[in-house]
Length: 234
Image (cartoon, rainbow, N blue to C red):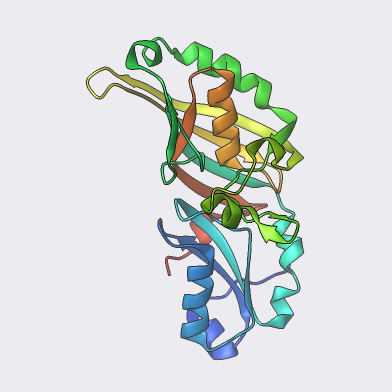
């Protein structure tokens, strides 16, 4: 990737090809970004390298023209870094705040959770681990995307596919227990291998602590050596 020159939107519009680094806003899907770039440039052959959930913000690599879309796998296989915020004591079916609540824990139990307990539990998620793919994901099973089946309630959580991923780094940046709001929240940074679901990582951490957790904010800060600081808002 070191020999690839990144383009501005104006350069792509003029040359009809290039690689764009977009800092995606919340509520946009990756498809929304591609559709917007397609509308601005007039180029039909456009792809992206690594889907971001609507909840997520941060680095999205957009590939314009056949010359660059064929490089998709090269970008996709890179390690990635994220910053993620989570709330404990509440579990959702999508593993984030956009899903339906499936389990809650009383405040009297939540408030007992300590920073030390969280740090200790996090250690078990560093290294190569087996991770269950979220029900609300674009992974295909028997030719159909999981989220399509999940929305219809036609999915058996016990049969969700599993994959081996690597968590290179998992750090706790902040931990807050707010008795007034009756909430315990935390902020993390993590570096992971391609194919890792951060929503699953936080969900599994919550299960390990026997209290539940879900993602409330997620930001991708890098793909390989490419950092979000180089990206532009669309």
